[in-house]
Image 1 (cartoon, rainbow, N blue to C red):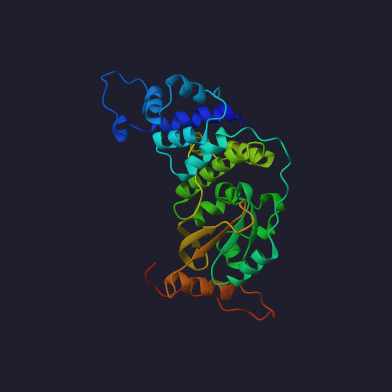
Image 2 (cartoon, rainbow, N blue to C red):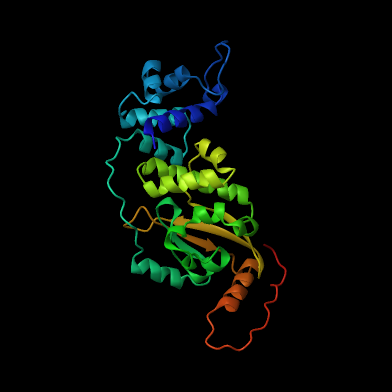
Length: 294
């Protein structure tokens, strides 16, 4: 990734979305040829010279101080993920050291098995699925059955045809996943596997280039997910994401459900139906869970 170009495109995209009235700048009567803020307006808000900001946007200003970086983040009204992305793009380029394979420690594996009543999984860099429990594999897809290089959440959402049918509000979820990858690209500009993944998605997913070129970035923390399972129907989750202590490049994702809800009952049915069997006696067909609030 060309960090100078990425920085320039990111800064331009962020100032283009902000109108002067949102910043409190007075109208100056000049014709506005660009959407959003001009360079001199961003410079004024950040307390730097227009020349310096121009050089910064062109990747020619070196490494600004933390104070300048924070002033730019305030001027451009960046959210926490965007601020993190800006810091990554402004950092001195890292050496092209090889990125070692990630491993999930035994304690996290045990935690996934303990959370056997809800879907849970561990994501690594570039949304690689490093580990998952049985319900996660039933609700999404059986990641363990895939070749190791294909155990990736972005690949599932964007390339698996079944994901579009199974994932509620697929377009939103897919766009958010691309924003997560964009944040990763800023942090690891020399990650060859991430570059290959982005290249493949660019070629195979018609919507990908538009989402990627928006320069939206996202760090997933919590939210809602909706899936439609072919056996048990609609499933509604409130997910929470955590960084396990000791490894900031891993994320534990847990899909929570309201006790006694229709989704909780459907998950119990799904768990019973898909539990490993120790005999070969015929099993009854699953029945739909009773109607209730989702």
